[in-house]
Amino acid sequence: MGGAQKYVLDLASGLKNDFKVIVGFGEQGEAGELANQLKQADIPYTVIPHLKRQISPVNDLLALREIIKLIKKEKPNLIHLNSSKISILGSLAALILKIFSPHPQKLKPKIIYTAHGWVFNEPLTKWKKIFYKYAEKLTAGAKNKIICVSEADRQIALKARIAPAEKLITIKNGIQPIQFLSRNQARKKLFSLLPAKALKTPTSLTSPILLGSIGNLYPTKGFAYFIKAVKILNQGSAQKYIAIIIGEGQERRNLEALITKLNLTDSIFLPGRLANASQILKAFDIYISSSLKEGLSYTIMEAMLADLPIVATRVGGTPELIKDNITGRLVKPGNPTQLAKTIAALTGDREKRKKLGASAQNFAASNFTLSQ
Image (tube, rainbow, N blue to C red):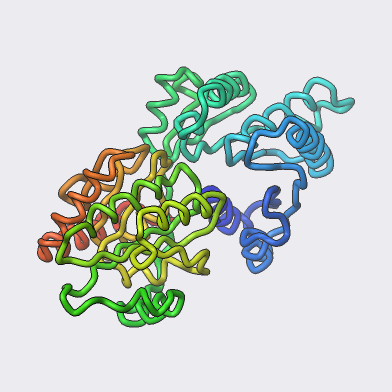
């Protein structure tokens, strides 16, 4: 699950005893992890078959019709929208029903939208950025409140004039305590996913530094820059670096091609999705977030709770989690040279790594609990 799905699951689980909650979603459908987790939590859900992540005029029109039918059937008091695509389609559906419903008094739900980072900040083509920005502006009028998961996102919305200030509120993400595996247990589980060659280090080199990242393999995660940074780190160095990126997605082929092109097949591994991946975070020496766009990253929060030193890109709400040189290190997005240089500096300073990890753990545990 991505961050938005995790957010919806946590919120629905927290509200189900006080409210009648139903979750609607598309893309992965019944086969997805969200459906599985909702079943376990005994939360009702419905699949919106034509709701897709990418822009698709035919699917989007069909999804709009399906959302209208869902609203008419459930007659909710409140609709909570949780992605840029559903922000637009959900607002349009509610507006259409408000105007054309034969019984409008029954179909006047309040509409809340949580922006998990603004999609027009993603590495998209210019026309898509413009489309999403103006679509967000045009549909903001249909929303009663817009939740930003970081103060940075609220400021972006104000600057872009997405909505008036009184409609925007910052409510930061929070996470539940995690049952981390010990370092040895985590490494054993992690290494079971890797080919044997990953564990073989030439005797002329020191023990490898294990770099880790967790996230869907999407362009916004900037994993290509992480891969290029590993190439720089392993060039002519007495220190061996192994990078493991846990996750799955549309960028797998491109990332695998880049790994092969850079002759890094013995240094970078993409083992795919792993259930409860956060539990094995202590296997890593340093956690890397190479994202080009973030809201407020759950995986960074999890790495903080795992007492890990973190190197992250200065995007979205990440600086609200990572205070440079205090709870981690911040680098420019899309800059593999700076990323490699910062990782190398941490590698040579064990005490600095311990200090950053401890500060990060304390900051996350004090400020980003789910109950808060």
